[in-house]
Image (cartoon, rainbow, N blue to C red; front, side, top):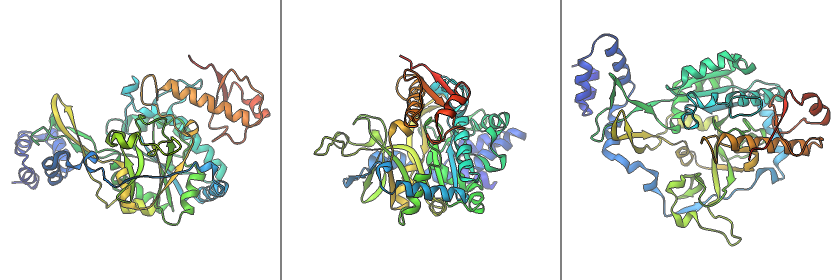
Length: 446
């Protein structure tokens, strides 16, 4: 009996073993590769535990809110910004983009980062982010490494899109693409789901990013380059201030924390965002669906929400923290989904925010929602391309107002990231020169 077959039998996967032995040639080789990529002992144990790893079952009775303040109001803000710029200028900061998602919910057939949210420039999310990085790198005088985690579903399309667009002016040597890990879906009775002679492999959750970063060799690549801080963010936030110098400087100035996260005030108790909180004195995130109603609706004496720190999926890690996480075990969460036509299959995933309790002290960094958080998740309504366009248009119009530029106040504006990273460097002469080129007017939609 081959070692692979023996592993399957030990893991109660006799049907998969028989299916493998019925194949030959390339079909057998491909399935063998799928099987070898999985930890069958762990899958057996996960099915036995079923949903016991769910965070909802682990909400501590000792749940405390995590206080935070808007960072821009802090007297240290300018110092943090200058510190971050120095670190960026030394090449000690990298960006880590989680970009494994497809744009199917937006009616788009392709990687979400390729999506055009309908701005006058018709720039994709990828291009907006690349140009922000390019502008910041020019300001600090040093290139910024960019790690892009794709998924098996969109890896090839993502890489080809960057090639076709000449990497949006960035140096190819500063970009690393690598795939998110996958885990086999199991039938209700714990058997591997087979899809056309291959395993039904599904993404292992955003918490798998730490493992993928290490296993792909990208973490070692960052260490070799002398990177000390890694800015981690999701692809769908159209307003993300990538590698924000003040954010980096704040973590650098904190002697205890190994990570930091950007936090916003919740729009209301029912907003569907996770909240930062302490459980058993350890920092972490509680998902909206897991937060008991009495906590969700709890208010302070002034009427503000007690559990108010909204998670916008923008994080910063010291490289020492990432090195620790490559060997740390995050808990697995479970979901019941239809896979290959089989109802109530088990899908397992890990969540990024489960890393925070393992790293200990963390720094919450409060930001203004309208300046930094506009996710593109839905085809219409809230968190849609339309809402993102409007937020960008209003923010950029505010940049012009603060720069004392004369403009049409009835219009919205799109300012190219090649002109301004976060509102700096704008003046009347630049507005007059770039209007219609890198500064575009558009109408607010009803």
